[in-house]
Length: 108
Image (tube, rainbow, N blue to C red; front, side, top):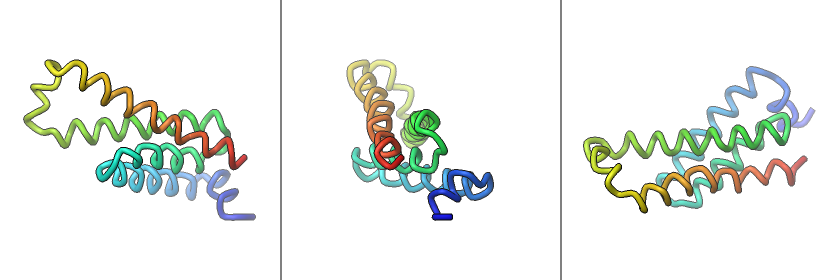
């Protein structure tokens, strides 16, 4: 069985691959916004179905946004007053990984 097939079907390797995909994707997202697309693609590739791949990509976006919020530290108190920037940040944080999840549909 190919590696991707094993990762998608075996529970233990699936969990390890998903955590690794999220870690690499979020690390890439800290360097450049294209990392959000990579995070969605990597997370969705380990999914057994396309629908679950979309959910994993959305989860990757949420993890990236949470990491960003934690990275803000004490400056997070000023975020609610910056509405247009916050809308763009949350929109990109959720939409770009979803765009990356198209990789799962292409592979299947």
